[in-house]
Length: 457
Image 1 (tube, rainbow, N blue to C red):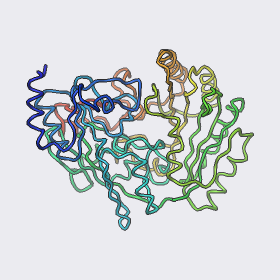
Image 2 (tube, rainbow, N blue to C red; image 1 turned 30 degrees about the vertical axis):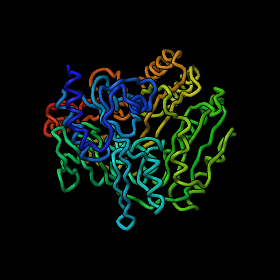
Image 3 (cartoon, rainbow, N blue to C red; image 1 turned 120 degrees about the horizontal axis):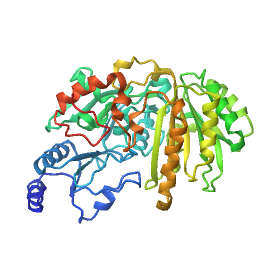
Image 4 (cartoon, rainbow, N blue to C red; image 1 turned 90 degrees about the horizontal axis):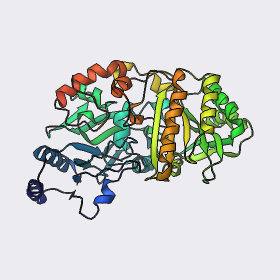
């Protein structure tokens, strides 16, 4: 166990050079810094290193080794399992690292590890450029990208990781390495899907594409009595969506907190205006919607449209899996399960995979989920701790009820902290053994293990 004296001495030695803040539990700002997005996660690190630059990250890694502390790495802090923080260890907090450099001529952008998608999109959209990012703008770029990077543009331009050109990584021995197609290509393969297993992503460089700034998108929602018909319609239209269009279906609650259940489809189209209008017209004409808000919208607004449904501090418990298919029986089971949802913030989402994301060979990146289909997210979210038991149980029961319809694949960014067996092996499937070999090369001691862990082979 690390002594108070050794901690004080180590901090004194760093005080003159560390550019950020080194926070202990009694320090002002500690409680705010330790909190992550999921209010269900309430951990207390022994130290928080709020880094201002790469040198601070290197020092933080060295400090953790010197003091024998376990490490967690925080970018945006959105990971639902709370992997960005740790009890009694050292949190390497990248939140202060907000640098973004856009090169509109080369259509690239480099951003530091604490940047969120809202901040990234704001800078790139000044030039009418974007890359695939999260559908909730407060999500950090680093965690989302390293684990996969689902987003509005994935059908047209692939996942966030498919647009990663390079990453600056601080490894477990404190070295700074570049991962790219030309430098450390094995590490570059691994970080594109392998999460934070191989080091701290100090910065990431992305390929950008012309997008917007105004695109076609928005939400259409229907009374819950139409839920089965809406989901069947979603299944029908997603059989032939163009690459320029992304669609997600959901069983949701009204935003006014009334608890009113709705069936919704959220869309974004990133092609020419005339084609976009024609593509969304069948959705706008379907059924009798309670809310219809699909039209021209700034790309940045589309990316922040859902933020209000995911407030920081809300309590979250998720279950997720890819589906084998979307049969009528599966849709009926989803509707029946949602009737029992005990929280007015709960959702059942169906994310559709098609287009560019499904045309990348499975072995080209660590991310193995490259077939057309659907990913189910059982999203239990609530504010009152008194109903935590009911809300977590509903998610587990719904996941069990959907068991016969689930596929073998799971998206690593959605995995919880109570998964049985080795969920990483399931999530990475045929790529897992290669990831283990690369983990052994870059982190043989498993120093970075507060993640969806890949154990060294």
